[in-house]
Length: 151
Image (cartoon, rainbow, N blue to C red; front, side, top):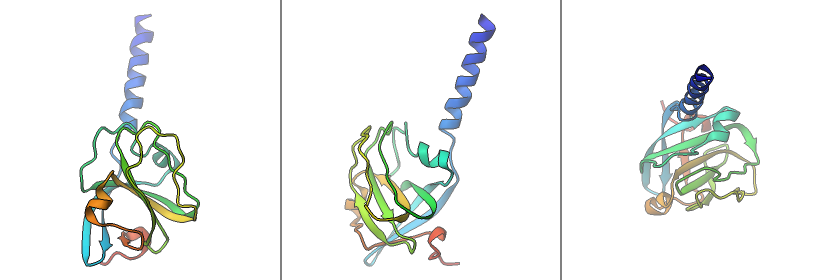
């Protein structure tokens, strides 16, 4: 019986470690008028990474975020299940333009959040950060997935 319990605890620990594994990070910027705002984002590209998102995170640094790259333009619907912190969600077109922003999303909410139009990606940043920085629809997210990042 003790061997079974120890095996179960070991397997559970592996799952917890995998759930909190750091994803690949990448620099990203948002051009808003004359301002450029720099972030370091985790990249969520696989279905599993996209589904996990920022679940169970207790904090997110002001210049941190997660970029959900769908690989193609498609309808996007996000939710806040098991997400412990409020987020701003920037819905981004193929060319990097922000088409819509869901601001200060409610932690734990199962309500579907989306722009109602197909997008290439979603950038999640700490809740309230888009307003603080003056980020609005029409601004541009600069990152290699949009083909607009220099050098």
